[in-house]
Length: 317
Image (cartoon, rainbow, N blue to C red; front, side, top):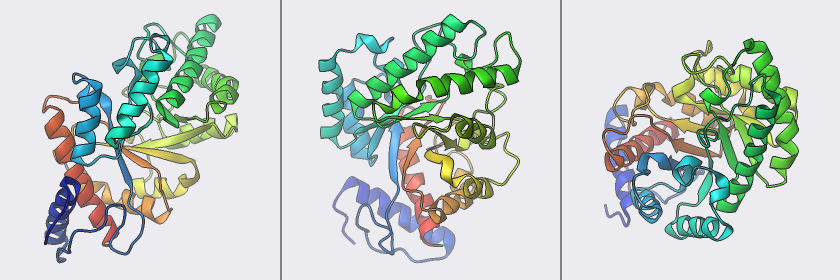
């Protein structure tokens, strides 16, 4: 069989491996964007801090070459403060990514920089300044061509001199206040559940959905990160089906935060991915890892091959 692109080669290699693992037979190269029955393929993005030591054009060209279709960007890799990026610089970043074939899909690690931001502190002035910066990031996101912002930032949302309940109340109030301004930029803010090892504020999808429903604004929703499911009480597939209407993005990696293929994600995550298929999920799946030791090339290439094998396991069932 003849494959005509690097991505075709990766997909055909993944198909062979998956067929062997599941007792099937490997087929021919499939059209990019379609499954074996013609159903839409998921779109894969890569979080750019994996490549943060590279110049922006190299990040974009390599991500596209290896088979990703979008970039999820950590703002601190571009500048310490959003205001440091001029309109011309934002346009250049956007066009470089778009022309490479990996448009910016959104932002994450929102409040790592500038230093000192905190959205649940008892200090009302600091809270307001921090939430106002979230609106600045929404403008940056839109200028880069993105549509989503993943709100993790554990250190900037954990309770600080208050109870967890009061911190969640501050979080809810802040989201409600800035939601209209974020919406003006055609951006959606997605609240990310994080494990209790990282923060005491929003540890499960249920926690996130409760806040999203309290805010009740179309610019605020939730997302699903496989790495951050340690506190979940339901099987992941059941969790996906129960909260399908509130999951607008997926981040993926091995449970220990390493790149895909180093652990058991290839088998363990397939039931949840089948659930995403069953609910008709058509958003992005972004690779986000926390251990960069292997280097960008290994992390990116091994992970995309693993993703494609996982996808084939889902679509063949």
